[in-house]
Picture 1 (tube, protein in one colour):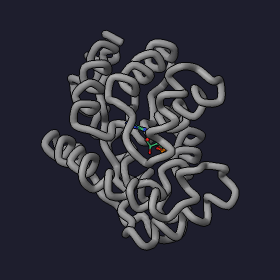
Picture 2: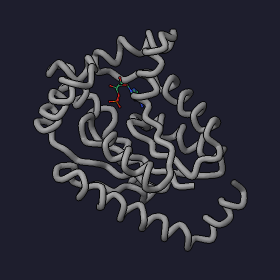
Picture 3: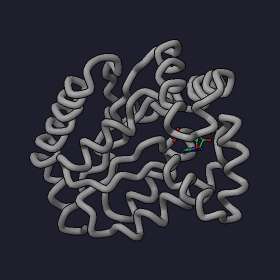
Picture 4: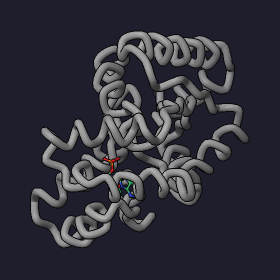
Length: 207
Ligand code: AMP
């Protein structure tokens, strides 16, 4: 299995790059933001609770998103791998993801972070808000709060993966295609290294 964490602040381009990567590597895209918006659209109790926090640009409780990811992993056991987009956003979520993937006899191959400065993020999200219909994309104060939440609560997740020698950062400003090529190069390096590791072969057999 090939499991990639695509990381970065809101508006960094994770969703755009995920769409290209799932086609290239035949992966399942797991975006906790999308999963939460689906709950809101269905009008579930979970969706109603999450909506208030999301509209304010605040994080939904860890146990909610961890539960959703656990369900999605169980439902997609035949997948060739996953792209995690917008998850994990806290160290507790990262630890839970490791545990969940271990239960499925697999692990995170690498985290790829797209780095984009705050002013560019604000510009991009306000532009996206004109068509996305997302309340959290339409108000500059809320956008800046999301970036602040990223800086204070989420950025430290990078250190978690750096500690496992799995962290890579890329400049998220530039042509979509050029950034995509750099992401593919990193993923291909991991795939090649994994194929050479005896532990990888053992994992495949167990899986
Ligand atoms: P996104 O679509 O990734 O920008 O997420 C939109 C909103 O959903 C965020 O601002 C949070 O309120 C919530 N959300 C998405 N993913 C997570 C997560 N992993 N942990 C907590 N809240 C999340």
